[in-house]
Image (cartoon, rainbow, N blue to C red):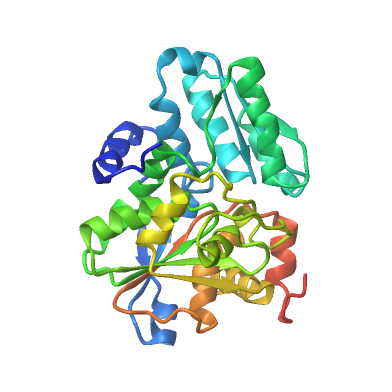
Length: 326
């Protein structure tokens, strides 16, 4: 399985343009004033399904031959990819089965079902949910569209990076949520092709950050999946990872890991100051800036990747002024 190239991102944009939103990039006056640098927010949480995942899922599904789409599609997901695939499948009249672990928040399971897909909650991790998805491929002939380690998924996510460099040609740094690497691999490919001097920084949680651990080891490794505010960043990268690990290793300049109080502060700042409801995974760029773990170099973008947070959890975070201990 070959990694995508820049031409694949351009082709993905043409393919998915009728089905996804071009999300806005806006200057954050408050973060810019606080940090003494130009800081922008990429509002990808305003995407149709509430997260960037619609780009990759739509591109991968539409790239399939008609006979493979007719057999149905499946995946394993922490929530947002499953919802995106369900949306793309419904738009194309395709059956979809999404496998989720018991760590997936109930609102994200409900979001999959609301899009018309079957949600199967199985196992204690995304890796265990993937076993069920692979069984559906082997026994039912469905097509697997993985959440990140696939060239068409990466190319679709790369369209987000393409928008960033088009809207901010003098981009200096982009902070990207880091999980399995589909988003950051695509964004980094787009950004580094259009603006080679720009820095791409991955931001993850400290609890069970599989890509960060794999980069330290020099090869994909398994980690224990843990509950975290940044639940969308959970799950492994697959010990047989063939696409995103080498792309992240070669294209990403730095990786930052954050504790839970810092992530909560990012969620709180986004709501109280920026007026945006975002989930923990989407808040990590803001959180890294607030915590002083990311220093802006040139015009800096924090990519807000999704908004699909449980609203009771969100209320508890934003209504509290004490450090989050959850």
